[in-house]
Length: 317
Image: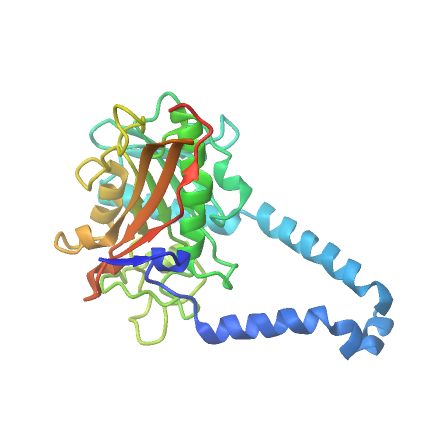
């Protein structure tokens, strides 16, 4: 297993490099617009000497509008859940936004209930705004990040797990999460090619998202989600310092997705990643160790373990 400290190694997929370079050039252009084209700003009624403040305010306005516009993300989740319902891998689902902090309630054929919390980019504060409901047998956090293409998916996923979710779960074990998904309409598109070998082409992409499949893939090709399985139980430094992880046998919602997406059984173990928490006692107190193992979808590459430096825990768990 390869050891790494690079967050982007948490997932094998990468955004299109040329698009990222162009976005960086656009950022540089906008920052220097007052020097490059002051006449253009004058013609638009903008004072060049105030461009820095105007640009910052504009970025915040756009960011706020993008965050508030959740229709694209809701459409993707609803299309996927509809697929699961049609294939019989879920019995029912309903949007419950506005009742508590959950977004979707899913009932599986075995009667288990799953709370699905739909989130944006993993490094956003919104990632930690959730409450595990008493009725949920499972809680799944589902991140979608279709518009932020400068940070590779692994970096976003690592931030969600290591800097947002695990610290919250450690501080308040009642908020335990069972699985984390990174999956949106850009997955498998030209902007974010997916290295997974399996995908479906029976209309789900067209129903879920306006983004087309990457060149070289069949029309409508959509890959399965990137999945991280979380600990099944709460970490406790003396009795349970490194809690065991969920598996495909115990993560019922993930299994329902894989069933609905026709993921072949031999591929499934390579399509899930580990998110581990380890507590250690030291002279200074309890150390919180967080790591993830990315199996890179079994495409002939060795798995990568990404680790952060241990942090001193202020909690007593």
